[in-house]
Image (cartoon, rainbow, N blue to C red):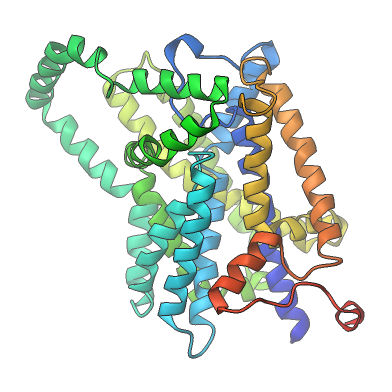
Amino acid sequence: MQNLTIKRIEQIDALRGFALFGIIMTHMFEGYLASMTPPQYLGFNIVYPLDRFAQVVIQNLFVGKFYAIFSMLFGLSFYLILDQKKGSSSLKFIWRLVLLFLIGFIHHIHYRGDFLTVYAVFGFALIFFRKVPDKIILILGLFLAFNGPSMVTNSISLLQKSRQETVQIIKETKNIAFNNSENNPVTQANAYFDLILKGEYRKLLVSNSTTGFYNKYNYLKFSGRLWVIPGLFLLGLWIGRKKWHEKIDKIPLVKIISISALIGIPLTIVSYYFSKPTNTEIIHYVGSIAKDASNIFMPLLYIVIFLYFFKLSSTNKIVSQLIPVGKMGLTTYVLQSAFGIFIFYGLGLGLLLQLSGTVALGLGFVFFIIQILFCKWWFSKYRFGPLEWLWRSGTNGRWQSFKITEIQKIE
């Protein structure tokens, strides 16, 4: 029975490590910009023909996919931490989220693409679903994960043609004044891009701790992640309630792979072709629905394929290398941001406008391999990752045992 528990935890950690691989590859290709690219710098990472291909791959097979896996695992972790332990205190979990927000805040003021603060804020909502019936959690989780609220509002907007035309006239009337305003997104993007290139540390901290949070909220709202992330949390909670993580051997992985591929791949293709700027508004609308749906089915496809490889004896040893990375997920994620800032920002090497997207992907891949080796070495000596240890110690209100003793090594 003990071996089954260890295996279950290893699968979760390995999946988390897999998600972190996709996250660093996405952010490396984007130059760890986490902001709108100014018009004059569009395509700054497209240097070689191969970069154009890499862009298509990243935008369609990476963006929105791996963070979805990470988000579902967060909801599952909520179940494992709070609901699986008898007598667990909601207040303790809230304190844990407060500490996560503080860690995320420090991370955010250096890299505004941080999602730790977002997870901490949305994580509070999970407390209210602790005793909600499974059926409601599943229905609401699916509605939010598929970006249902945005779909509803976009549908209403399409039906109100006359109102849209009126709004458009008003926008065009104010266009000149808006372009000269400091609130213009292009103006803000230029200012932030300039901060990154110049490496003005103090100004960067001020910008990220003020405008950065406002821009993050706007991005969450515009992209639909304001709804999608809580939905993914709820789906992860539902998976925990159903104890799928304990019954992986009984899950028909091959069947789910076939179904998710038959649905997810066509949706991704539709999203790609329907999202082009030259398309009409209605085609864009269909493309946005396809994109939101593909961001559910493709992560599902990735998860079941990964679990299938984890299950096979011939590939288990390879995918198991991701276990230490996932076990040290918080530290791994923050170190990835530190690496990206060092490579691209003026604070470090300042290579944002000098690296092609493909070269950046290569650097990200090499650094991730280094992280695998580092995490494997680290856990041969220590019980927790550095940030995980601080987080756990703060949560429990006392310093946790850090080093592995000789007895623990033997066990």
